[in-house]
Amino acid sequence: NVRYDGHWSEGSAQGNGVSYREDGTKWYDGEWTKGQFSGKGEWYWPTGNLGYSGEWLNGERSGKGKEYDENGELLHEGTFFQDKFIS
Image 1: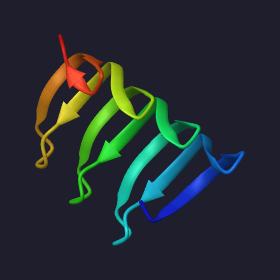
Image 2 (image 1 turned 90 degrees about the horizontal axis):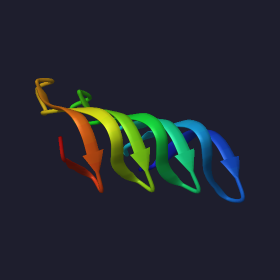
Image 3 (image 1 turned 120 degrees about the vertical axis):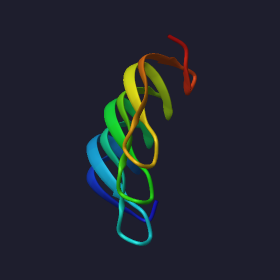
């Protein structure tokens, strides 16, 4: 990511914030802990379409969420763990 708009603490993203790619497209919008996606948030494909909406832990999809392909079609809805859909 190139740009971050949001809260900072101890030199890293903390709390709510939005990060953008070099071309200005949104990359992630949501909660951060120590510079990593953590809590509820949305990750976007480079095309601008939503790729994942749900819970994160330590920068990985973890908890309840929805995963979408690059065209916006729902791929998975349910539980994710260590960045993988499990049920």
